[in-house]
Length: 212
Length: 198
Image 1 (tube, one colour):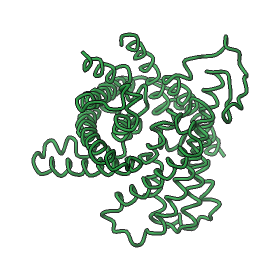
Image 2 (cartoon, each protein chain N blue to C red):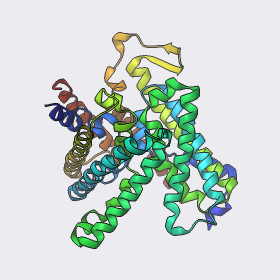
Image 3 (cartoon, each protein chain N blue to C red):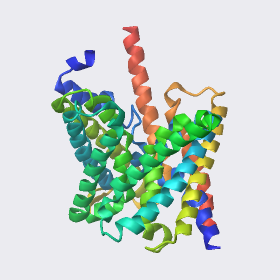
Image 4 (cartoon, chains in turn cyan, blue):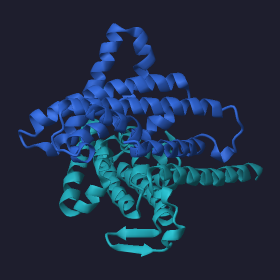
């Protein structure tokens, strides 16, 4: 298999850019749209996904030779659900405001297709170190994607960029804000426009490569 | 009257897809044909309604009395996964025509966040949905039924629009997901109109 020849660095950048989970693979779209109202909640969600995805990939990779094929999915789900429960308790104890703003979507990391998808496609076939690198790359790629969407939505919709708590930068005065972007509908618009621009860039690059 | 308000709110105002973003992966993935969208909608309606009833019962009769509500995420996902498996076995055994229509969609439903999302919303976050921490069994059932009918309605309407859209030329970089997202944006804005009614 050609995939096994890849170095850890290649695996890491694969998730980060080439196979970006948000803009290329469209995995885990529900939280992508739901938590991008502000940069702060997008960062919080990203941190949660980094924690769960790295540890779940590592754990699943370690037990990959003992798990019977028929029951692998329930076992993966139990591992992921336990990690999410740990994360939930941790966030409720130390950052309760963030836990409230993420709401149900914190628990819904369990059914995020990105995490189960990486467990099935990568961690169940590769060693622990490579799986952790893959999980880290994918999770940071996911975080970057949702922070980008959140940046545009918050900047144009509410005129601010909130990094943490009260640390917010007010950039656009109230008269020029587009309120619909911070509401639920705006998420579809911003995400659609960004994906179209990225597609344009990728198509253009593919055509140039053909000419050369 | 209260039940009608809950049902109407769940179907139109708090629509799972357009307003709460639950279950978007199948929404974008399965909505290219009307027939598959309809089958998916039926399967989701069935699973959400019954798994929410089961989850509600387990939460109130097991997790709350023994003070282990922090386990709810793990318990709910196991309940949903085994319920979906059971339904799959059941319809495979008793109705092969139903199985050929819904069979492929059932495994997908386990990872549909609408199912787990509704189960968590009516139990752990019930304050936000019903304005009370102790909703009755019927309130929860009607809410779950409304939410899932709203899901089926939107996924069917959306697939009809996408089928029509296939006939028109679209710029290459907007094809597929981007234009579908813009369509969803317009539908979500239209559905804001229902917010004024309740």
